[in-house]
Length: 179
Ligand code: IDP
Ligand code: MG
Image (cartoon, rainbow, N blue to C red):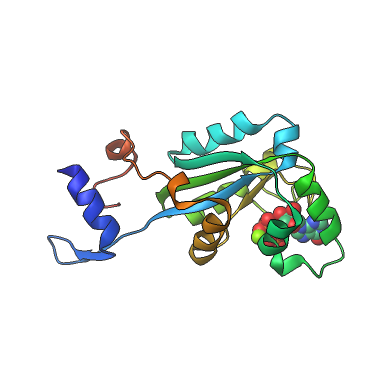
């Protein structure tokens, strides 16, 4: 029965609750890249562990080597900046790990966990604030909006590489009216 409601909620964005207030469906999936600065420093497990410990669900995960084509799309907002060649080189320096991460308001939650772009200015407790000293070699990429998450997930994953499954801990991560 829980499954039934779960999938209904995935289809219907707003459903009235018993008390007639609006139930807002906010389960989201976001893209995270564990950058070469994470892979080379052998922090993959540690960073994945942070997302899992928070209660976020891993819906897809794979290692891939990025090339100029995908980087020019992914960093389209930065291609004209003087540091772009160095950024592209840093992103091609080794494979990255692409992750699809799911949870209620996952885009904002993951972005907050990621912290400010420049690791030197990122708050302690955030991933960049705990593991990075650089503006560029900053361990992780995380989608910055729901719209961009959808675009970026399509850029890095084929549909069949993202898995929809119900986490057994769901009822202890959230109240039933939260997802
Ligand atoms: P974000 O990763 O926090 O969303 P963006 O401004 O989208 O930050 O920049 C994308 C990536 O480009 C950053 O994570 C960082 O690796 C790199 N970057 C951004 N600004 C600079 C800069 O001024 N110098 C060097 N690298 C930068
Ligand atoms: Mg960005």
